[in-house]
Image (cartoon, rainbow, N blue to C red; front, top):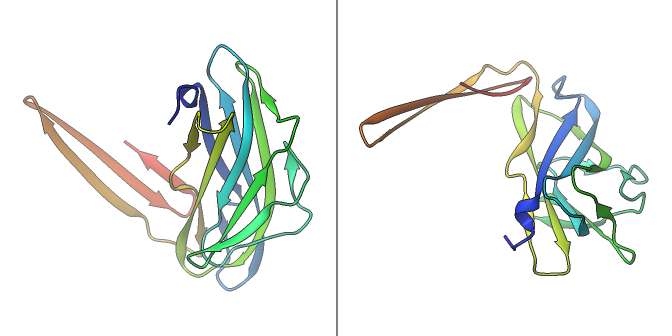
Length: 171
């Protein structure tokens, strides 16, 4: 992360967030880039790693650009990259910019995760990613629940993470 990377927050969402098993479904992904800093940042690239079995729908890019992304296979997954040429898009302080696109998939009973990254311009000043995000569920998924326990300085902290076909919750 570079000196300006802490000025943006990147998130991603998918709609719908569930689909019938065995039926091809089209999903709309939206990558949101929020400038939480006090000055304008320029974007160099937006990248997205689709879940296994998902395919980009040609001509579906909207938001920052309608240009087609470059598509490469990365471990059996499609990696999409929108590389902005001059003039690079600006995201002003407090502004949220988006890049949206569609992808199709035929789901099995499972949860499918997406990842997105934004690289700032000039090169080398920072890349910010979402980590695993925008869960999409296939079929009726029994909830997965994880308990995370930590003890630090005599204080016990417990977090329960629940993943269902409609999303993730943390208590």
